[in-house]
Image: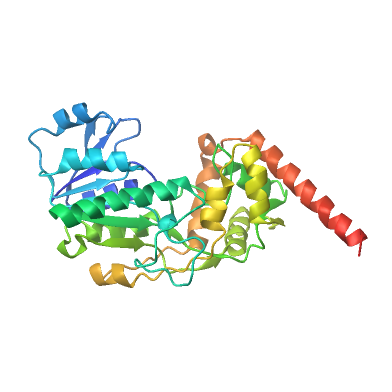
Amino acid sequence: MKALLIGGTGTISASITELLVEKGWEVTLLNRGNRELPKGAEQLVADIYNEQDVRSKLAGRRFDVVADFLSYVAEDIQRNIRLFSGITDQYIFISSASAYQKPLAGLPITESTPLYNPYWQYSRDKIACEDVLISHYRSTGWPVTIVRPSHTYDKSSIPMPLHGNNGSWQVLQRMQKGKPVIVHGDGSSLWTLTHSRDFAKGFTGLMGNVHAIGEAVHITSDEILTWNDIFRLYASALKVSFEPVYIPSSLLAKAGAKMGYDFEGALLGDKANSVLFDNSKLKRLVPDYVATTRFDTGAKEIVQYHLTHTESQIPDEDFECFCDSMIETMTQAQLSACGND
């Protein structure tokens, strides 16, 4: 079996590449060649946004599956329909579980939950991509499968509800130094974190699967955690105490906007909402799928990686100042309220 992965070296896709090679697939990655090539994969160095160059690189090739990790707007999908029609038996588009209805009308989330997110442009763009693909499937039978990941991570990423422009290391560093950290709401909303190793099991099970054609499927863990749980697991891995300061998500969204942070999308459009996913559709399509990495294990892997890879410890003074300012403001407001009782 031959697979073309557009991207193939990111948080989600690198584990898929590795598992496909292990399974004996012929794997080709189409990307700009800026990251280390996973062992056993072929590389086509090209920018997917340069349609003419990509077309020339693909001349004479055919793939059983094309998996697209780098499309974000409808125009990207229209380009890929032009590029890959007739040279693949299945096109898999990576959408997002953040596209599901916000606020949610009910749980659990299934693939039939409406797609609607008024808070986050990223999610609305993914919905528009899905609309183009489903319309093309209905009119031409083009062999599309839509996959909706939720919050997927590996050891090199740090899942957090909010962070600055340089990633989440600054939050871990605050915890390591014994400083308080911002938690949205009261930290009790439910969340699901899925290790990329587990995601890869479900994803590869959909590849070359005729029953997945024309379908949309989310792939998540069945483990449910509160954000308080998630922070406590980080604290345990760091061997420090968890010192939260709770701030309403709406207040964080307004304050963050002044700093150029899109917390409205990241919180109101995503992480401030409790989620509980029904994975029964995936398990019907991939009967042996099971997510086996709990986040207590994942948190230890993340902390160990970042403490031993100094290049990943990217400071973010702007976000540090934002956290200090918000925490001070909230603390003073609470003291003032207590004084008025």
